[in-house]
Amino acid sequence: MRYFTFDIVSSLPEELSIQILSFLSVKSLMLCQLVCKRWRNFANDPIIWKRKCLELASHDISPLKSPSNPVLWYPLYRKLFKRENNWESGRVQTIDYLNGHSDRIFFVAIKDGMAVSLAWDRTMRFWDVERGECLSVILLNHMAEEVDFLPKKWVVAVSFRMEFVHVYNLREGNSRVVLVSPKKVPLNCVNIGEEILISGSDDGIINVWDWRSTKLLTYFETRGGVLYVKVVNSNTIVSLHNDGIIQVFSVAQKKVTQQYSFLSMVFDDTLHSAAINREWILCATQDLIYLLKWQFVPDTFEIDVTKPPTFNWKMDAPAIVPWCGCLAGKGRSVLSNCSSTGPICVVKPGGSVKFLTEPGQEGVDSLKGFKLLNLIEQPTFMDVDDRFLLIGTKQGKLIRFGFDDTQLPLVE
Image 1 (tube, helix red, strand yellow):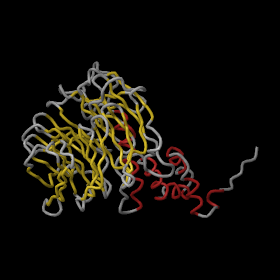
Image 2: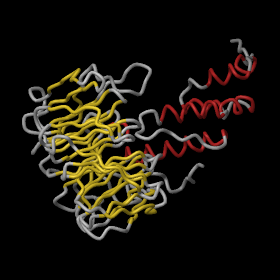
Image 3: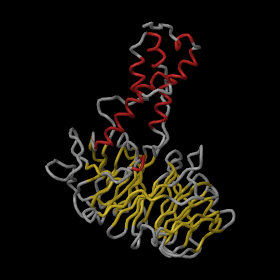
Image 4: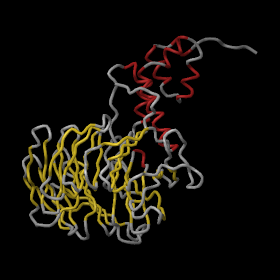
């Protein structure tokens, strides 16, 4: 038998060789490094590991930040891989307390490593989650209902039951503008985009503002209480109602362009709570929890509002209702019972459940025989990004759970 020793890969132009190897799996790349020095250099090229990082983080909630030096793409991949393993296996790496509030926390939101919390002490706090540092505190004259914010701009929108929305610019001395609902209805949800801000009410009124100029662009009168509103782009908004209706609106045309009803398909009761991110919809009735998935416009990261979301799973979970729930990247749902002190579970797309355990232990699939991650204090609200889970408690504590591997340094 004759063996050919001609090295085709090494004989090609370097850029082409690297391009070919970039299509291999990570396991195959590790084996390529053992062939020879030249192959090892190809397999370690930053172009390859940048591609692997982007693939691994393609469905993250927050966009991936590029390292300052290209040689750091491989360490960043290791960090992302460990983080994903921790999520998949239910391993919490760190637990810390972010102190500041003195009463029950009733709302938490986290984006791009920044967070906002609201509490019954009538304060709103703006946090750097990674450093655990409170960057700004605002004393509110009225009890707020919900918050949304633009983390890079330090702009925070707060809806109130008193028929108005405050928009704060935290970089300009906490200056604010006031947006008043024309229909004088209590507001219960808000969402802010780069150009427009929208609010929803229990009476079915949806307001659309240009928040910079404070101009009311239009408003919509809909059927059923509005649970959640979302800015898709400057012309398209989406609302979810407690009767299971999802509506898509055109701001320019001032009308409903699409409407989807899941009441007859999966919802057999009135919805009372929901959490929505870029790709997924998590919602609950009195006894059941559902996960739906948006489809994307091809070659973009924008949801395709011309097609209805698809049903992913339904959970009969009386042990978790009344629930605290939020959505992490890749459709992972984090759930806990807000009338007790735990446990906390992560439900992956398809419906498989993993219960979180104390740091240093593996996550488990069953409630029996394991030391689960139970809170000392009763959870009231939670939110999550790809690295951290934040839980506000009845006692006014904000607890940060980290999923980054503590053995790997942060990549700048």
